[in-house]
Image 1 (cartoon, protein in one colour):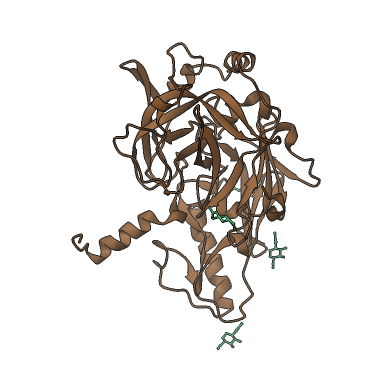
Image 2: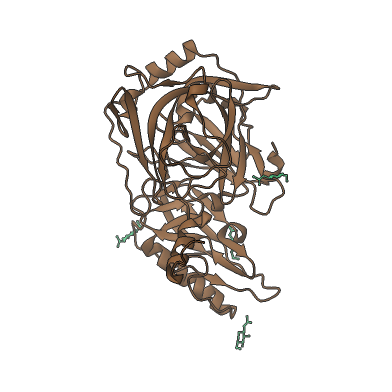
Length: 414
Ligand SMILES: *[C@@H]1O[C@H](CO)[C@@H](O)[C@H](O)[C@H]1NC(C)=O
Ligand SMILES: *[C@@H]1O[C@H](CO)[C@@H](O)[C@H](O)[C@H]1NC(C)=O
Ligand SMILES: *[C@@H]1O[C@H](CO)[C@@H](O)[C@H](O)[C@H]1NC(C)=O
Ligand SMILES: *[C@@H]1O[C@H](CO)[C@@H](O)[C@H](O)[C@H]1NC(C)=O
């Protein structure tokens, strides 16, 4: 039997392992991964080459599945192909999976990827066009590019930048293959990763991300709709390019240009329960980052205090007493509702040109006999996966904008 840990340490351990505190954003809480561009953002030569050598399907529809508070995408990797789930992460660029031999791998419910058993595995050659991008996080030594990624909530991943064939479900019966995908064969990870995943699919705006590598098939447009946590439907589809249905009445806002390729948009203000918070001008100098690798949203610390103050006022009015902080994490805002309580407030993020409504279902975590605000204070503001449930999103990288509207995502069954 393991030596007994002091009580406080147990609590801290639990907090560190809470799935909803996970955030793969490279800028939140602590780490700041600075990517340096060595060149102009033109990766055409690489993508043209891929198109001329590769066989490209016209439609692929990867499955998106809920895994606790985040979402995963299943991909086939290698030849012969093995299916593995990856965290669907808008906040990072390099796709990676845990490989053998492994120095330190987190436990996963799937076998490790074994490059020796795949006919199509290669280390990234030194003259590959994407090397001028991977040098932002990878170094060449001893005949291979090694990568080193540090995520916002403290996880790290290191390994060898490689090339492999990926495959995804398509509109036809069988899977469609995408050869020559640059990815990371990871063999040394630290920090919390769910055993339901084997790695990360990076979907930011960098030329290295999967969406950019699949440019000819995706037209750099993708769309998803996350079913809510209590929905019997736990799997929907990620759609690309012309496979995205025309949807009426979408609202839209433009991406800010960012050095880290994140999907950052301009945030002008926040309303709680229909009333706009009285915030100083320029309260969101770094806008709001749309991210799916973050389980719940983060709000810039000073604004978070104001959100919290207004919510406490709201619940005071209905005579609810705040539970002692620490129910789910440090400083959290939790209440236990009276039977029949219905006066849950909502929230709106006022983006430039578009209001993003967050109803009670997406604002609070409903646990046994209490409910808690599903947001944390942080250095930057992030719209996380929990606040994106039952909303249709269309990311259009070429036109530099994101479109959205409420939708019943259970209708988007896989
Ligand atoms: C998704 O739902 C199906 C059917 O309800 C269930 O069998 C499966 O285990 C669920 N998957 C996850 C990851 O929860
Ligand atoms: C939020 O609640 C307020 C007050 O109940 C209501 O007027 C407003 O329309 C709601 N906003 C959204 C986006 O649902
Ligand atoms: C804040 O912005 C408003 C509208 O642009 C402007 O009228 C006001 O003077 C600004 N306040 C400060 C303190 O800069
Ligand atoms: C809250 O409590 C006060 C004092 O007991 C009472 O007068 C008021 O009606 C209560 N309000 C609600 C919404 O229950």
